[in-house]
Image (tube, rainbow, N blue to C red; front, top):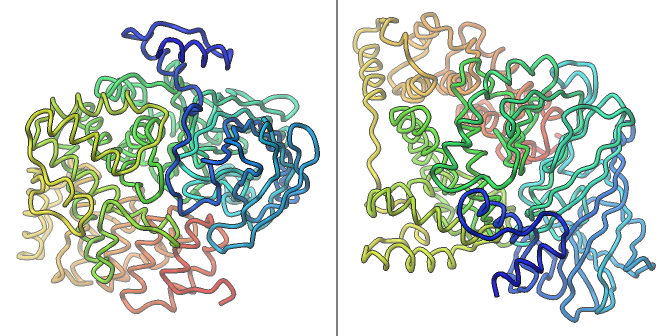
Length: 634
């Protein structure tokens, strides 16, 4: 039966030749072939709080996108055509937000459609009348100024200052603001796209990409493996490509390209290390594009083309764990995807665990444990911040009627990691590695919800080996269980001893920190005790010039401490304002704005934010609006 299904799928798509699922590269090709599109023979989708789509009635399977990118009007316009599968339904429902729907066709004929009532979070349902036999719908539309996924940047907001730039960010539910779509992570589709842009710019997507500009500004893309809608991504700018290996490389603006290429030169080694852990990389190409600094995340794991912030370009590869993280998403997140945003920890907890294993394989256990300990400290701060809402410290969340961004906290990432790290110490690394490798292989190109994962874990790991583990407590209860993996670092112990010496003697022996990594510097700054006041902060800054750090992570934690310890020397206030205006990475700027608010400087924060907000993506702006209780017309 399996062979018959395999043949049918291969025949249906005419994409790649069938091969026997037996070991090595043939096994990888078989995996790609078998899962080239979503599992069309099933339609048991789960309840979804963040999408109007009713995929158990009618579901999209493949997208053909034909769009024009207009930088003058700052709109995208064109046609989204879908191959659909209907289960005896007379209507198919898509998600739409801030889109102007011009007309709809069903199998080439005009179709009736209506828009649902607008919702501030979810947008509007797009209800299209179809016949039970309808195979394709086409939607003619254009975006608007309110489209939250899109950020249009003027030349001065780019590195080279010559041309405008466009980037999209779809996670969690923003793809519906630039493409009418069934915007649920449990719906997987393949896609082709034709994108027209100004001739002096290049377009790239989460798909097969060009390596150089075309003469006419028209680019065509194919994503032949099925992905969730939040992973459809587009960037347009004056960018160039430089390869690292036949399957890895980087895109960046010209002035950034060599720096980026050096910083990420270990990408192929990372892919090999990841494959050695959990199986073949099945997305063919792993490239990274470094975007302008307004990009709201450290990185976004768009398949084949990770989007990354320039804040990771430190000049010494010290922040490249972010690339290991996004690469790990090629298995946990992109290959096996959270079915709903309540299950977000299945994407991120697994990815942090995988990231740490890649970092350990490449750079040693010391560095991996330092990264894990910093994450552990972030987790403690997050849990402390949720004292008023302990429900938000559960791994499995209830985000009904809430923005799924509310679940994108250290809980999903770092409590999820700690769960798996503790599980590893309980069952043994060898058993866990085999379990995870099989988990990714058996559920490739499908979606997973928490309850299904727990059943799989019990059957294939715990019960199989007669191991007792408090899985339910870790996943469904608030806070942290008592059986946590103990993570230690001798290097961090030395850093803490160094801090003690400063406190006791008010003297600094600079030789002790000569060989510190960025992780040691971050640990140093984050753990400066309450008795360190502005006078000692000035002494530390004079010794190490931290206010002018070129490492954005070290700068961020130093600016936070400067605010909380009322330190104003070395022009640090001006540096903080400059950082907040230039950098749009949500984690970094939210940390600093929280510190300003906590220290009673909301007025100052608002003053800076009014200058910075036009440079922020909507994802970042919405978060800072909430932190500062800022109304855009304030």
